[in-house]
Length: 262
Image (tube, rainbow, N blue to C red):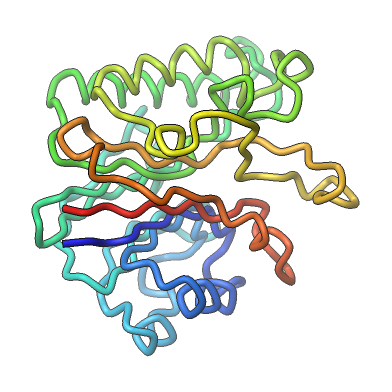
């Protein structure tokens, strides 16, 4: 069974319903994982997605904030969710495909503006969220699993436009990078995007604040696709659809794709 999977922080699935449909029509991933849906589950615009063949959905939502959804052409079994750090947020959901692969869709907290938990509660919440993810993977070693989502951390020097300038900027600080590395190691997760594209600058997010995001190109790779070692070698064809960031009224994130032969 071959399937293509994509992850995309959509920044409001209702506001950007047309963009989701455009991606589904043009690139047709078998599974699309969305983050920051900003919608209760019953308000997600399923009719348009169903018309395009995406008749399956597993999701967790809340009004105006957060929210994760897995849309699929393939049958999905709801595998539940975890409330890491006890935030009461819709930031994780799991689903299982017919071939036994479990997909975990995550939206890790952004962490606010100041990388100091003593003065910034949101930064502390982010670190605690990652710690509990790590501890879960240590306690229940994942197998035949894919983890995707907006992890809100760009771990490598070439995952940001300027490593030195961003060392004190939330999403690339040493403490966050170390915390993400521990989380990845705890589940023996393989970074599929970097397995396929091992060298060179690679971004999936560009700030709305830039008057010309494309020319400035001050991006960060915040969106990730990981897989457990038992299936990581089946992954290929990773890519980030940079041009989607330039669509009309876009999300500030671009979709990340990978294909698996399983």
